[in-house]
Length: 288
Image 1 (spheres, one colour):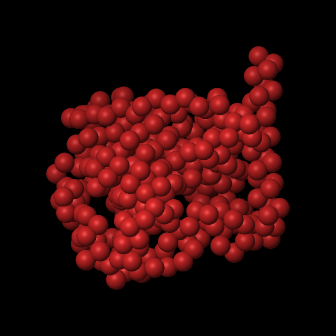
Image 2 (cartoon, rainbow, N blue to C red):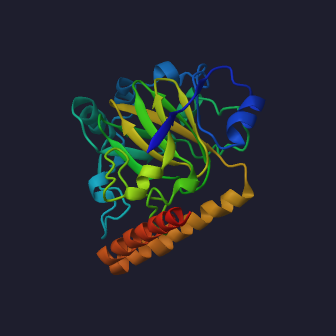
Image 3 (cartoon, rainbow, N blue to C red):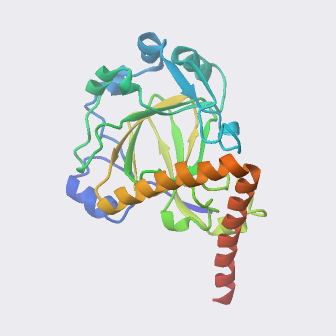
């Protein structure tokens, strides 16, 4: 694999963003998109623990989240938010709080940040937060709804690996899902030889910085330290709105349905198909 560092920009105009990043679907880090947000200084671990620690939240365990069976793609257990915040600050853990729509529980938090004006068509009803402890990793995937994502990080550092959608065969894309089989943090080139040909981007996101993740970009997120992020989404295309609906349909009807009926056999079939697609690329390369 080869990676290019994601550029960091300040004072980027709406026009320059469109020409240089939005239209060519290229990631970028804004150093100043959140500079006027109240949340930038207000939101801390202590703040969330004190004000919202008694909320019960769904905790995701990546070691079980993708296993076939009744827990497939579901939250693994529930915990008080305050207890979870204590946990991730005290010890490395892979347990994550994923796509947490805290604004449904605490709508007043929407006053602490502003919808970016860098582009239009933001989905204002769907801000979400992500929390993780040191070492937590979010498996390589692209977002189900095919929206552009603006991810603002708080307090610490977060590492993100990104790949254009077209790299999917090199990444061993599992059919009927938005997931890839490979482990970007621990690449196994003997098992996944096509992965060597993947070209992507690497980002280190620090406090107050915002990463633009273009639609359908594969991304793997690694928490260097305990931290949390806020995402807001934009979809400027009817075509990709429809593709997002198709993704949702095939995930909840086909993938989850087949998992329910066939379990491990369905998981094995998806893996086999991912290898077949990667091998087709290898055959084409040898012919060329």
